[in-house]
Each structure stands twice: as structure tokens, then as C-alpha cells.
Length: 118
Image 1 (cartoon, rainbow, N blue to C red):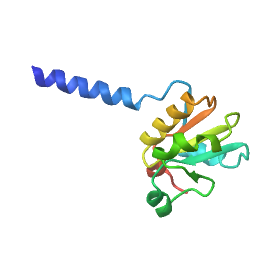
Image 2: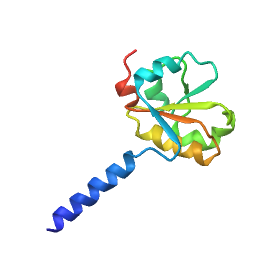
Image 3: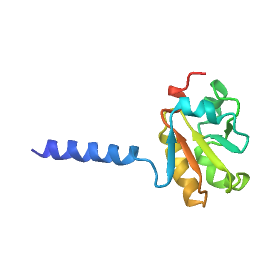
């Protein structure tokens, strides 16, 4: 019986973790392809420098998640920020940090670089 309760708690925890941060838009990699043409959008890849060096999308600047809070001043709060990582989890966390920092237009790429075909 206790095993089922633990299992249910783990499932609820993961569903809660996957839920987008309040006010964060989520887009697919196909939707991202159209957005890449927009010159008024800031693109941030929150993966490690090694991951970024291995494979990245040209328009994205690398600001690793652990450095985001200290480099947030380099981003414009009045412009949309699109964040990506490997799977979509770190970028979701980054999107939440940006919202807390006062950014109003934050977009997360669902599936991250794992889903990117380009």
C-alpha cells in the first residue's frame, strides 16, 4: 500500500515539474523555426558551454543556467526572450528565473535541442 502512495507522489511531482512557469509561453521546435526570423527576439541557450559547442542554433547566445542570474542585465526586459536547453527542463527553470527578474515575454522551447531538426 505504501508503495502506491510513494509512486503517486513521484508522478505528481514530475507532472508539477513539467508544468510551465506561470506566464511562460511554450512553443515547439517547428514554431521556433518561424520565430528565428524575428530580429526583435533574444535567443538564449542555457546549456553548458561544452553542450553548446557540440551543437547549437546560430541565433542563440550561450548563457549557462548557473550564470543566468548574474548575466540577466545583458538582456532587454522589454523584448521577448526565447530559452532552449537539451530537453526543455533547464530552459523551463531559466524561464521562471527570467519571469521573477521582471521579464514579461518569455518563451520556452518544448523538447529543446533533442527535438530540434535543423
